[in-house]
Image (tube, rainbow, N blue to C red):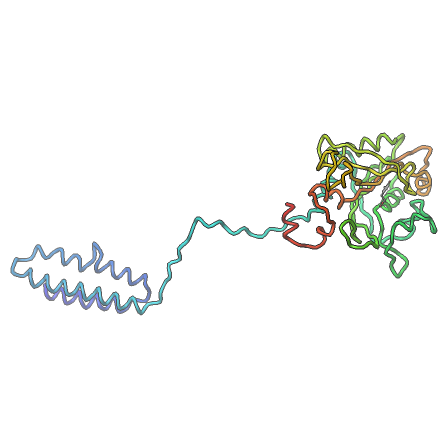
Length: 334
Ligand code: DAH
């Protein structure tokens, strides 16, 4: 027995000596001192020895056990520490930052979607325009006083940044013949101060419907259906007489305030109504200019402000919020 114990001692010390990681050390410990470990096994077998051998075997095995335990502890100190990370599963997870469409893009898409469901198709035009498309073809020749209202950005080559999306009407009517039913979303530019209600760049959605016998009531019905679709069934519109050179008659489109339901509030400046678009019946001169016979065809047109509508949707009173790229603001509108 003494021999056996001495051999096991040598084996155990060598085993511990050769260990290289805390996992290996734990494995060595279990193989020696665990329930089925070799030293544990020998200790258990003491009972089977002749009674006179038991005291010595017990003493030696206890000493071995203690020695091995000490060696294991010593070894443990020399091994690199593996830190146990405590995971707190109750902490809320970190949300990954996801991209999202800008609120103006979303509103524009919503507007386009409503008109597409009414049978309009989408057309685009250039943001750098010629004087002809932006003004002249829209019945606004040189020296026409309406040009002053536009505060145009002119480029050195004589072209300009379009002041509205209306030139797309001309481009489309030049290419395609009626019946026509199109909308055109896009950016427009005006030399305006950047203040709570103006931005030198802004968005419009232009609309044009030319067919036989298109009437002012078609215009009104279309805009009213649009308003109800965007802001709810109780929404009303009212057409307020106005002047645009390219339509006759012309009107401003006023929408019943979606916030106070016409009672009057901060958003509608206590009038119950907000202006969202200009509109009218396409001027016969404009049709004639693109080779469409105004005795055969009539049309209506409108141009609406996307920022205006977005401000109403979100209850925002400063247009600059859309352009300052403050994520705290933009994310708040999701
Ligand atoms: N282009 C006009 C503007 O920017 C809005 C407008 C008015 C567009 C009447 C139209 C229209 O198509 O018929 O102020």
